[in-house]
Image (cartoon, rainbow, N blue to C red; front, side):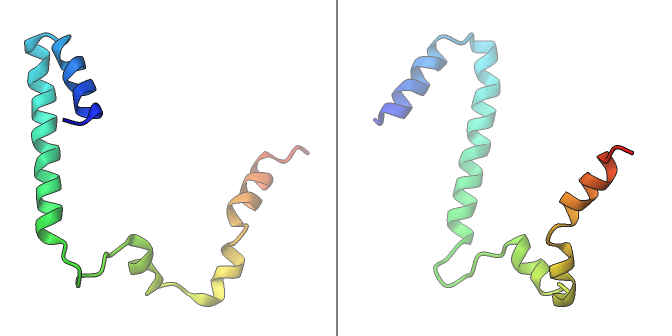
Length: 81
């Protein structure tokens, strides 16, 4: 058993049983997520990211204009007269 798991068990031993039920549900959910990720991901399947999807729709001409847009908006909004 790894040190991290030993620490987790040590923490669980100090928690009342009626509260451990919630932790058990969380752990089951995490295990389900880990299992589904390992099942669905293969070495040949590329990882799809939001940036990858959105880059298909990006207007390349607007990218230089957007570079400092947030900073400029904040300066404009909070500028003192």
